[in-house]
Length: 202
Picture (cartoon, rainbow, N blue to C red):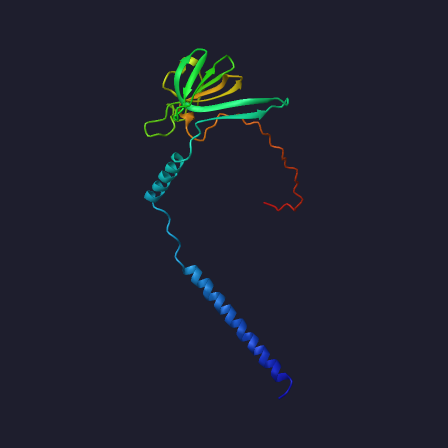
């Protein structure tokens, strides 16, 4: 047998393996192309999914009341109270709120207290809209709009035994997940990156 014979055999084997590999790949591509796509959800399934999400939100824990200590910019400390409940008593200068678990707290009200009223939701539970179809926004009101039995959220600062309300929210804004704390954190990360790549023509 000449030296060229083994070389021819090797070339033939390599060609056969390559052909099998290409054929297998082609079959896999053809199979994936003919595979039927997953069906899109029906309107009823979409509606049930939305309903499930609403139920999930309703089942989330509700924040009723809390007390925390914060450090202010000047280095001093302050005790902050927040509460969700119904108005148990009210006057032009004070409001008493009772939470669902029975916790009751009285708050002094002064000229710096912000009082916000959310529009009542529509009959189907959706956001209230005006005649123009636009969603109604919350508005600033006075203590005259706060009545016994109203659902409210209150936040205030505690000094000794007295708590002064900083914000009172009445209406739809008292639902779960809408806190009254003011965001004091500042974003420190700034984008400094510059693009150095080539610009492709449009």
